[in-house]
Length: 338
Image (cartoon, rainbow, N blue to C red; front, side):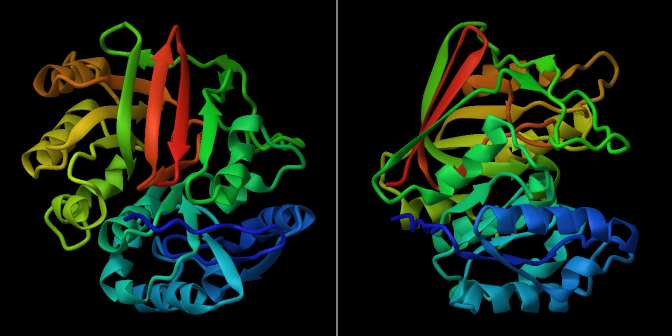
């Protein structure tokens, strides 16, 4: 059985950097995110790792793990969110005490998704793949990003519905700050390899494929054990992936490795987020990757969904039962906390 945390209004949010911290020159920008959270009625508590960054990490692996676990064990903290992603979160996994993971939300994406997926697979505690704290610093938020609160407020047995965004952000423009963090200018369209209406049902699992692929074959990526321990016999998995930097052949290799490792054995569909990566190699395009996977698995392959480094993105809960429907370029994801 999956365990679902519940976020209460006025809760304390613990901010720690298990991957990258904030360099000195960006401290003032990040403080805007803290103010924004406090304006929403939350209390914030920042660890030391948030304010340091050197050699592609906020601090040593042991210090990052210790600070995270200290917040996990702190009864005053109900939600743990990183400032943003990074590069080397995988270093902390061997130092995390998974037996001491509490029933509280951990939310983030990018490099953080390696920790999120590991927590859910090893403990059955749901985790939230969604916005990092730095992307909540604006005065206003688009309706897709803002849904994170409603998702984390959802109680066991309840349903939370999210619809596809009408527009997405084509490129970042940090030099022109505005009351909105994201500048959504391009028409969003969810697509299917079959080019028809597609729907799938199952338990959500996923994250940034650049990093979660490195969990294959480790104690932190035992998908079959998770299925046996926490789900019903007939439960299927809907995988969702977002690609930060991989070219098409690297993406293909990663997906084949997951398939050979059995990650897709009980899979009812795969969702891919929009990406600014996916560089084609020798006329091998990303849609070719998706078609190859579709031909091999014979399940719905849905792509360009609102997930990942091309904002905005849905809040997808690892472990939640979901029903996904895509038709005429629009998508709907319903999650039930059962």
